[in-house]
Image (cartoon, rainbow, N blue to C red; front, side):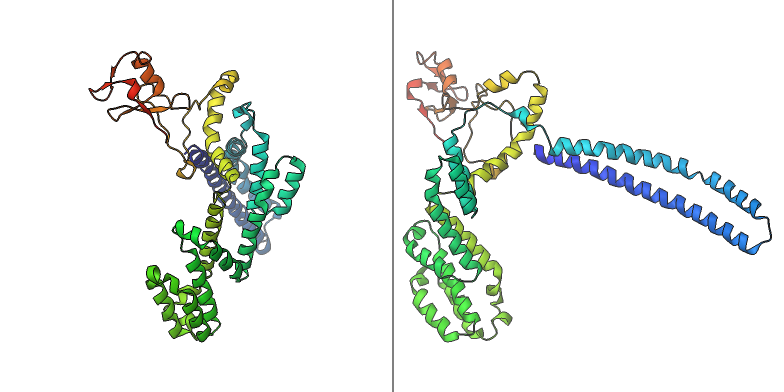
Length: 385
């Protein structure tokens, strides 16, 4: 939300510059047209009259003086210059902030960070870069074991780009049990693509043979889809003009390739999105409010370094929200490992420190702040989100 507001402000500043520039250009063109018109009139007079050319030019000079082009353009040009001088500052403020203000001196586990970076290169298919990084880092050997797995995935995807489904079908067949456990129909979707590919070549008999061999095991749960594919056999020589022409769309290959990538990463115990990419993207969203906070807190950097939780609310999009957050309704503080949420016998939830405070460290019962129940702190259970 903060980033969106910054970009909206930047757009407004750009629109102001564009508006002023358009106005200035329009005004300049108007003044130039008047000048050209007067000059053309003067030329006509010089060519068609016996008047002294000095008097004609003197009249032209008078007319140009009345038009006063410089004074007419001065105002709009000044407004344009002001708008243009402000825009770079707005651009620099929005896109080039001093992010070092929000820096905290935290000790990172360099081994883990290096592993994350190396795995990021491998999952992006940058195997040479990943190898180089591991060699230079010297402590990311555990990431090297991921290389062969991601390399296999990219070999499969590369083959799919070349419309070769054999490696993908082989992998899906090998992992069919695991895919079924995850509720995935990836193997059927790959057979689907292969069937259409064979039929597209005009080989109706070969396509029917392929269907009989590979679709039988899916008949119980995917009969409707298989029936549609069988309908394609009636249009084997003109599939692109048939009601099933949508099956020829290259988008179908892209969708299955994405699904294969997701399932491959899932079976490896890896997320579909790169953890490094997600972290950086979330950081970009969360940085603006922190930078604003540090601007306000200028001169109190020591307090920022010692804070155990974010001092201001940071709104992140849903794709960056992986865990539930609990804020104690009594203390108004966010739960932490040292101060976890506790479920009371009445079903309401407070943080541990609030319960300890209200029960005098467990020495007496207390009233729930939401209902008239008497609460015994010993009966409270920790909640894990």
